[in-house]
Image 1 (cartoon, one colour):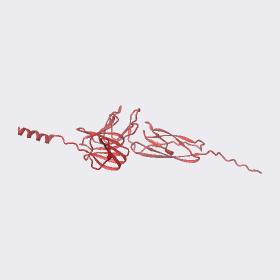
Image 2 (image 1 turned 135 degrees about the horizontal axis):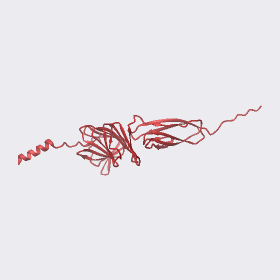
Image 3 (image 1 turned 120 degrees about the horizontal axis):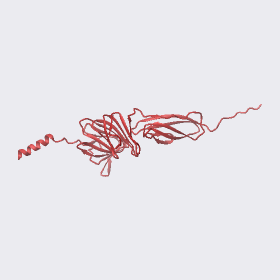
Image 4 (image 1 turned 90 degrees about the vertical axis):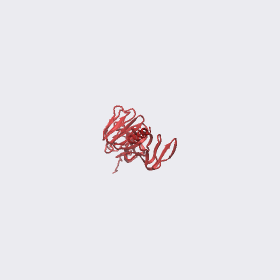
Length: 269
């Protein structure tokens, strides 16, 4: 009996799966909080996270790691909940914001979900951004990704971007190297109008902001419309576009508003 017990113990020791590394707060920059059981506290370096813990990046950034080969970088505004460690890997829920992830070969998979949609990575680098409206913006930067919860898309190849807005069909395209911002400014002479309407194209979902904080969100086709107020004289109008992954682009136009009209000259002889 003793020999049998020792034999079973030896078999378990030799062949049992190694326990998974815990998820640890590796880096903190700015104001980052950890919520556990409804209690909020500053996130601390080296802290091991538990199931259902939530990390919120109020300002700055945070890096979470599982061992040496799985890393998640949370950017400002991100809120992420740890769902748990299972035999097939790490599962998290991105509630809002943007996360960049790295998963190296030979390590457990990483599954990031958000409102029923998500990504599974086993050997890849990717970035996922979601906003308050439920927009889902995924980029496969290295390796292939599994996708779930998005109609018509189950895989995303390296170098591809998946954009899915609520109520809209998902689109797959190449990851842009720069953020498009194409604005055909009105041509012609001075205008007497108090405002102009500008129609342009940017990346799907990009936020375009003009003078005075007026803004518009580009649609799934990238199109947007802004109405810009004009002051008397020459107006230099700057638009700035920002996509969900933080890329920025600007466009500048000049429009003259003249309500005085031409000046008549009279000479008496």
